[in-house]
Image 1 (cartoon, rainbow, N blue to C red):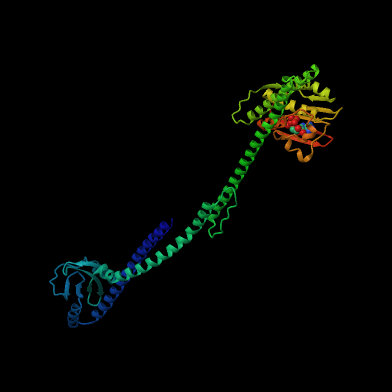
Image 2 (tube, rainbow, N blue to C red; image 1 turned 60 degrees about the vertical axis):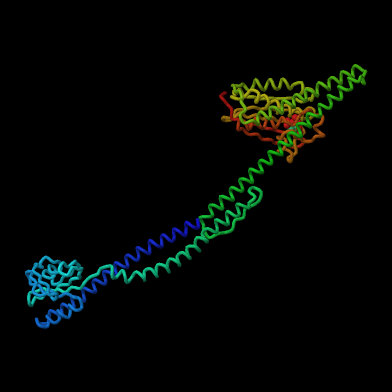
Length: 458
Ligand code: ADP
């Protein structure tokens, strides 16, 4: 970049210098011709005032100075020429003569065949004698003036070139410096891990680059944080999953060993052991199914079979299935569902309703109530499940949607659960780009509202 800037500068300088010098040369050349011509006119005026004899002497003198004096009649005949050449040719067509006859004076630069050289001619019309007096000086044109100007030109050029080269080097360095500063910072930067501090600089154009770097750093930092969060969630998930699976497995193994070693002889006790083994294996099956559902929902190319579903029928089935659980917990369920049809996965709708209603029963109080209300709201199906149960403390409300999270392990120990139910509900809601709201007050109750944009028609 630096090299390119210096090269461009020198190129611009040389072009401007040559153009400038060309113009200057042209102007000087024209000025010198004008001056020379004026001098010739002055000399002709003096000549025109002298008599014939004086003219002859003057002609000789002028000839010594290399000047040519010619006297021409009105009809172009040469009366006198101080070169002593025998000129027969009519001069009427000569430019300077023509001009002198018509307008009093004329001039031109031309090659003289008589003298075989370029001449600068000036001619004046003498109206007393009706003659044209012409004076000419050898003209060397550009070459002579160029010879004079060339050394000056070269010296000026070399000095100016050195100055411009030096200045362009400094300028290039000052232009390149902020870029070097930025690339140094980028090279050493620990992107996403720390703030990138870029020095202030004098070019506003560079602000765009520094802003872009800062934005990029913030984005990387965000992505790293997201990756770290996801890594932690995954790690927690595996720890929790293996722990949750180990607990029922240990129980099953314990009861099986008891039975195998015939340590229990009482038939009733044996029956209890077998019941525990069955319930623990049921719990394991549910847990594994829930884990599979969650990982299925997290898979991006997860294929879902959608159909038209009559929500009221699904809700009635769910309530029916949970009626034993509700009766044994002494909890009553009231439901109000509009006749709506949605287009979704039947499994998803069943899981949402089952998890919400079963939680409302599980975390309720004796003689508690559960209200289920399903309505159509514009394009949304809105499910509202409320209970008069133990409630969830404000600080824990966000966490209940995390996998394996159970609010109060001691308190919920007696309640069967895996801690995955609400996480599944949240995943399903996200799948349909819906919304989930939780309102709860400890010892008063909980309300969960799910809105899904899946309404087909009424
Ligand atoms: P679980 O299998 O434990 O029921 P969930 O994911 O369904 O798992 O719920 C997570 C936790 O949120 C539960 O363990 C419970 O502590 C709390 N919770 C869920 N629903 C309710 C509710 N209706 N009332 C009080 N607490 C609830």
